[in-house]
Image (tube, rainbow, N blue to C red; front, side):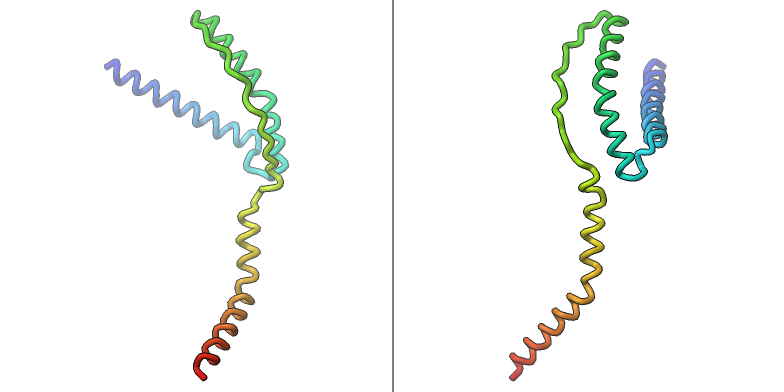
Length: 118
């Protein structure tokens, strides 16, 4: 009986975390343009560390546990705008020149075969 209750509690907690993540992504419009995503990432970098500290202090007060102070997270500068859809742009550029390159390579191949056949 106790195992079923714990199993149900784990399921509810995981479902709540997943639902909260989906709501946060929708609410912050993270699936929009790169400008919105970059602004949300910057905002998260400013808001999350103090919130985690406040939550750890709250847990310490409520439980009496001592949580050691975590080191500061490293500062990472990753410009999303510069790499947004870079793979798509590269693939589309390769596909746009593919017909002309195929024609060029087939001509070169045909000339090579004709030269070897003589």
